[in-house]
Image 1 (cartoon, protein in one colour):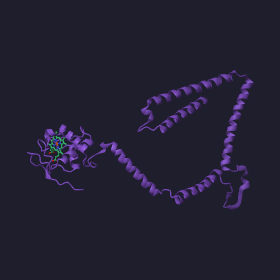
Image 2 (cartoon, protein in one colour):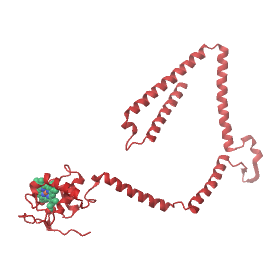
Image 3 (spheres, protein in one colour):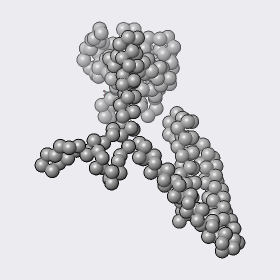
Image 4 (tube, helix red, strand yellow):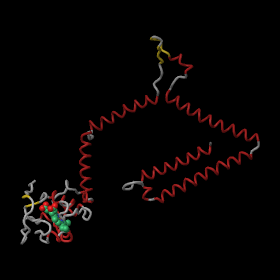
Length: 294
Ligand code: HEC
């Protein structure tokens, strides 16, 4: 029994160490232990060692106890019992200090002299844990009032606003390092020289075989005119590159080969060629499409 308790105690301590490590050493995502499995190994070794020590101490105690003569054994047991009793008394005292309840034998002293259909009232003292908690709320209220109403602490609405503003900043920050969050609903026309020349490179590697180097059209349609089979705005062009054209026409889906940011670059590059009038273009296909001036 004793051994079981000490085993539980040791295990609980190790679990606490585990939680503490996880809490104090935050990694980007997932558990610290998953990233540094060696730590888990160390904890396991510590656990085993601690269990071994507990077992050894218990065995040693046993041996020492057996080596005592009968009188000494009795005395030892008595002392142990006394220790337990002291602890128990301490708990009882703590409880009565916290609640100030009258023992049931003394209730006669605090009974009040009214009686409603046999229901009577005891004039108990307020439990100190409750009473001091109440005082604490009063003191807290002064601090609260001073902070929010005299020194102009932020109201809930203001706190909300500033958190939202912070979140917006964080999202912008995040988007900067994660450009591949783009999809057809969020893609925007890129006009940066760097983006367009990256788009031009992607175009000449993947697309000229069918659309021609000047985008005047070949197997695929002319990409510089006002006629589009699919929508001719950035979202439409992005979608057809990402998802592909009509089945069997030859325009495959490029999302396996190109990252969203790259599709946005090549789509922007294509739109930058609009109206460039390459010589000998393929005849217009699709509908006349006017880009919404946003
Ligand atoms: C194998 C030939 C082929 C290749 C390679 C190809 N396309 Fe196409 N593309 C086509 C065909 C054919 C169509 C017409 C699809 C349809 O009619 O459904 C098309 C349509 C398009 C359209 C829509 C045009 C419109 O009028 O709506 C765009 C934009 C486009 N391609 C861009 C690209 C880009 C960018 C690349 C390179 C990443 C590329 N294509 C590579 C054959 C190709």
